[in-house]
Length: 381
Ligand SMILES: *Cc1c(COP(=O)(O)O)cnc(C)c1O
Image (cartoon, rainbow, N blue to C red; front, side, top):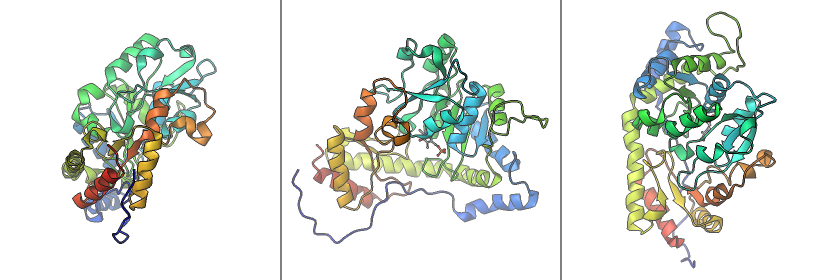
């Protein structure tokens, strides 16, 4: 664990994630269209075009993709459409402890008390099988499996779970856009998937999101839930919120679609560079990158929290930011510490030991070399 004293001068701080969205010139033609139509929100022409192009990309039927103001809003819309608000008989929403706090925030907005379940050690996801005989099964109003670090959740096991229990399911697929587009037949279907287009995600509009499903009737209800419960007539017909995407965000989204194939290539180049340099350093078995997970994450698997702390310390010393993207699990977030829960052994093991390393679609190979050199010096072997 001994390290050589550093002789180099202080170098530039490396952020853990440096987002890159379409530049102003790329967005401008779309903004001009907004000037012409004077339509700024409420399903204007840009958000309709954005939805149509995204539905095509994800091989969904027309109307199968509903844009939203954020990934969290998309989750709320999908939950209200698929399950409605919590009831006294079914007050609980089952969510994995291994996720970003937005999953729990969304179910709470729909009146549910999150119930924290553990994830599978291999997939890092909720496993529907053991939930079938869960002691709280009769009090669960909705299940919200999460795509961890953008690794998409397969539809089939959850469709079977829904059929066997009658419990509605909404997938938090926030960061899984790349995986969904890669294999829509496996990862999209009757179970609605909420996607985030936050600036930190691979495909981004700044803030934004969408619900994706091949159930067009359900998609229509999601759109209604995200628009004050209104559909057609000016009559609120269901529990709702305002979670629509504005025309300005749709403008960025259309520009992002225009440049998407180059951006995806750039993301995958970063994953490949990490792979190559970690192989050269003898650390490849510690690396987790796309296509196993979303390309906006590069993860280092540590043996436990102690090693992870040490590695993060060494990175910090060398001016390199890192992040435990899901903290140590929801059970350790102050506000969520008292939630009802199962034993969370797997989450307790993996959450504090998966370190997010620096990423950006245009991350320089030299910076990756700096990161890997620091990891090698920290004796991660
Ligand atoms: C990013 C993320 C969200 C939230 O998406 P927003 O667009 O920021 O609201 C929810 N769940 C997970 C797992 C995420 O990674």
